[in-house]
View (tube, one colour):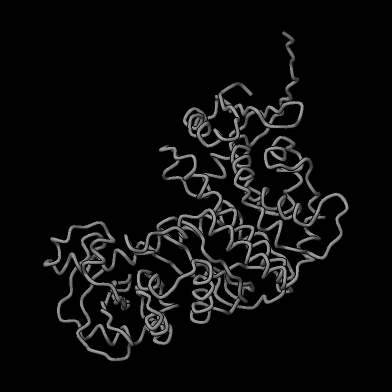
Length: 457
């Protein structure tokens, strides 16, 4: 019997865990809709335009906060390129040229490809509307940029007066932490103008018919709480839970509260039912006035508008229906459910800015910035899916920043055979998280027949 041996090639990578995710993405063909649909009018010399978009995407997962970092984070790591199915990496300036060559038509193609990817791989699209509500958080976040960038205008940018930039509008499927829709607007656009376009795009992505909209909660802050926007949402069948847009009206409505209740968790906050009736809304809503004592001793007022029943909010906040007869508990449940948006869409913005650097990659051309934004959205969702795929208890509380910084940057070796196929992944045994990830990664890569173990690097 003849015995043959095959030479194995071992390559070091600073992102061995990310390499495992790259192998999984290739198995699932996650990037394929973009490669097939986005047709950028640019010649292929060494790398196709789709390859260069792919390199930009991989660099985001590797922690690049600027596209210039492609050269150091990906181009210098041959093993990571191999794991994602690339035999080489485009130089960063060439990737920048490709993004600058993108047109509005390419952006539309990218959005359609993103919809396809989301429908194929997300939990949000597979949500069981009969079993529970779909919760969608909608919000905006400022992205400062140079004054000469397209659509860079003065607007609201936290703690940056007179700054110019653009606004990122987002719809998040909060139960799953997935971005359903990201859209870019000029700097002066706020949620009052962006809410309806964002929700219409979401309906397309999630394929929300009338029955599904009845089982969908849209949660917004005061920017989406104008009478026109709330009525538009209610007329389309959504359940609305958010703040009233008008601060002056909130102060007036607070005078109609008969009984104020103190928040046991925030002593400076009090709340009560608005007793003044209204027929301004196209469907019945409940209104709760909230007042918070400020440092100068005066109260700041807000009004919460909700189309949810008391049973709904108690269930959504994980409380017993036996509390229905407790007015304080019911009111508090309405407030808590609104407060949870802080751990949803607001946290997603913070995590993406810290972990993926979405606030630091600024392109002068608007279409280029839109393409970069969409790649960032895909990177966010891939990180969320990777956390689910690995199903490790150690990662349950990890956000975007810690996934990129602590999980994806575990060093190790990638072992390939003579044909260039990855056959083994060796994690650095000195990395604190490595022992807990070996078994989850073995399960993740079982169908690709890639062995995962610990070793010294």
